[in-house]
Picture (cartoon, rainbow, N blue to C red):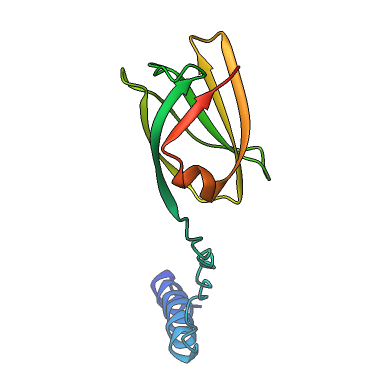
Amino acid sequence: MRTLAQIAFLAGVLSGGWAQEESRHRESVPPPVKPAPAQPRPTPKEEVVMEMLSGTLLDKDEKVLSNARLWLVDKATGKVLAETRTDAKGNYTIAVPRADTVILRVSVDGKAFMEKEYAFDALLSATEVIFEP
């Protein structure tokens, strides 16, 4: 009969020895590699050509209209391209992205309105705009 010390020794040798033996024969398996996150493709940048429009807003009697509000709207899309106000002398300067045809909307004191269609190049070369509600 075996003694308790012999049984403990054999149990320790057998269990520890097998575990060590088994770990020596295992092939090292690299950890799973995570795929790199997909990078979004850069969207091509659209070039926007800005033009400076400037001039003087006059009424039908050729008097300056101060503090009038001007909007430029792209006729094709209906999108407001830019807006500004005239100064005390009726002058305005506005940076606008180029469009084929624009609609100039004008409001004086929030009461009188005008809306007129212009070819962009015609408005670019105009120095005075006559307001006729």
